[in-house]
Image 1 (cartoon, rainbow, N blue to C red):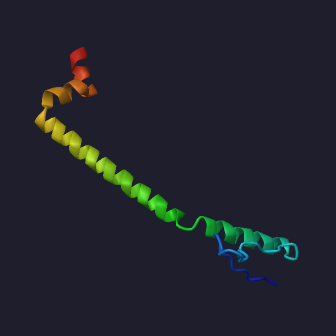
Image 2: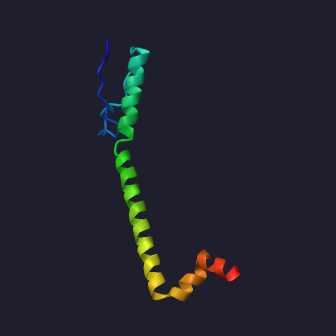
Length: 93
């Protein structure tokens, strides 16, 4: 027999009992685990969206950095060559 428990994690209005305060002493261990699992999911809601945003920022940063390197190489080839290891290899030979 399984119990369905709805949880809202957050601050309630003054004088209201928050819904995440559940008396779990009468629940079975499996039901207690489900309640804790639901709390964890409610607490971390939106976390996946944050990861997606971080990946998009990373990709945008890599694209912009690549464009800057290409422009630097086209406009200032001597300073570009001095600063990169490819040119150092030829200098050492």
